[in-house]
Length: 120
Image 1 (cartoon, rainbow, N blue to C red):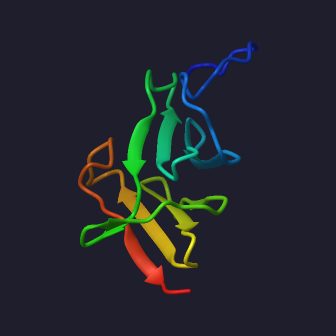
Image 2 (image 1 turned 90 degrees about the vertical axis):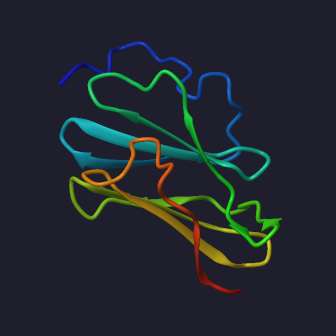
């Protein structure tokens, strides 16, 4: 497993966070961290013995040609040790979801998309 260490450091690697971080644990040796940038983009990083060297962009939700900046605080959940999901709301009150089953999907979430769950 690895140690988180005793020294604080900039986990976002130079990225400005515009939201509180959302941290979920999929098991005893794994943490996933989500945060929103000022432009509404969602970033993701994780710890599994050590931190990713760079946060992964999950982008912004889109529908057709339009992109939707998330403005809410994010929420995250892990149903089990192979699943993680993040939720957010855009300026129009629409609820968006993006999830990954880590046993099946790419670690950079490139095979997942944002899905609109509710219209505000």
